Length: 243
Image (cartoon, rainbow, N blue to C red; front, side, top):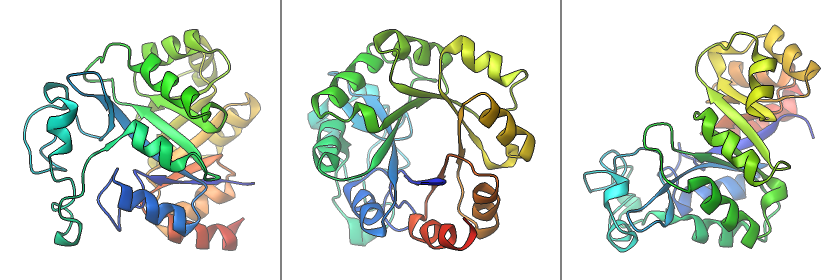
């Protein structure tokens, strides 16, 4: 397989991000994998949501960490996108992994702990992946370097990646010190030198968020290991043309 196509929060141009409709559409589009975000509720349940505050993607207000699981499940996570998705609930990590377990899909789980340092988030996510026997097809990523170090302490063999929207000097050495096996960065930072450096040092390079055909073409031509896209159905079409 060449460049892998991960549906960014599911097929999030077609359905509300990080919900089951978005994941279902990504699966039926033939995406190689799904990227999603994990945070913890007040009572320690891992749920899938990008923002620390529920305001943008639900009919609620306030921070995820201040809601219990039962309270969060009552929120409407679909109407903001379209009335067609009214009453779509927030998804728990358990629900998502149970759904994906029998599908031939790869996962990228982003730990959303660079703003709020959720206690035991690494171990919680790891235990869930182990329970569903999905460790080998999952990459764990975060903007929080310390979090990635903790994940490596839990399991030195798990695939991990540091997220960064900024250029990092002496990248290979920096990533080696953290112990990650991959680098996830913004499309605007992608160039042939970065691709060559990652390939030389056996670091998986995955690019976000790749929605335009010209962007897709560049990622495919530079043989990036993966792209995160809101439109996996289009990315699948363009990969056939450019790879």
